[in-house]
Image (cartoon, rainbow, N blue to C red; front, side):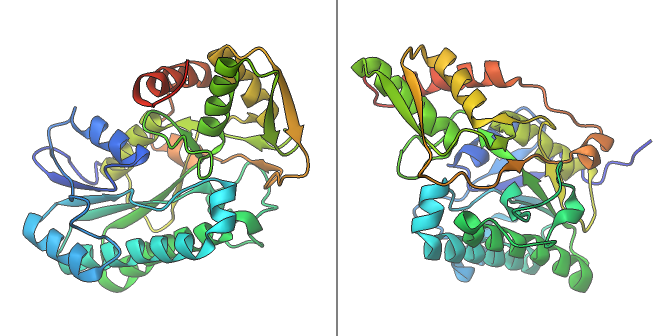
Length: 317
């Protein structure tokens, strides 16, 4: 029988980045457990600043940290704002990890992204694929920062004996996602485009790329459950992949979103725009061996996100 590494009962858990899609999902999941959830106010506490992070941790004394704070975005945002993506994410990781060490946090979980892996990584991608080749150029700035976060946790384990771990999720979607077409990921971008096209009775929707790349999509509530499972049950230097173990083409994803939104026009693929990597599917055998599997099917997950979008966003129709 496996031994629980960290018991949540009566512990104070700091969720860094609680206002984002990932952080808010982790907060929702933790509120069903016998623990106290702590969040840092924004504006007020800037986790890019060492003194802010350390002061807040000293004053609030969490037992554990789930580090979900990050600057995130899709291909366009990564490609056009590389300085923001590398600086902000490097700063957040380094300041929070060091502040956690200085304030004797019992355990820390750093959350990254599957974009850490090489552009031509063998599929499905195992954890051992890290640093085995060149990164995808359109998101290398974000990827480098997330790789640095993994290495921070590993280095702090080796030098200081800190119980710091890291996990890398695949493409995420869910309530609270970013639907800004200038900075969003593929699911919210397609969902908004199709909703607005349906409302305007447009004959078609244009989609970046060929539609041929294959991607894996995980509902953010499944990610939150996996993160908490790892916090409780895993301790180790190697990062752990979080995903579904299944992928589909962007064209197939677009058809699923068309069905959810009720858009009846044509899907036009703009092949002058970048595809990114041809395929990105994670090997999740390490995670499943720890006793966790995803529960939310893509079709039902997308339907729920569309209902959230309609009820929370200022949208036509």
